[in-house]
Length: 80
Image (cartoon, rainbow, N blue to C red; front, side, top):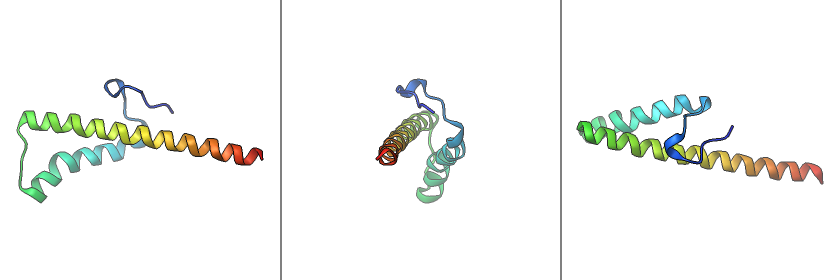
């Protein structure tokens, strides 16, 4: 599965949906409210949503690149 090279066009892959939703819940409501006693304004909530989405996209993209590299290494090792 290829993850989009552009953050703005990416769609959360099916295998990451649960982690994505959990990350958003923890990052937008649970941690700020119950750990720090904070609540976001509407603009703050939107800003943090964008930041968390970018971070999650980068994490998914890096994970995909690592998996591809490991697969290539395993294929080369099997050919030897």
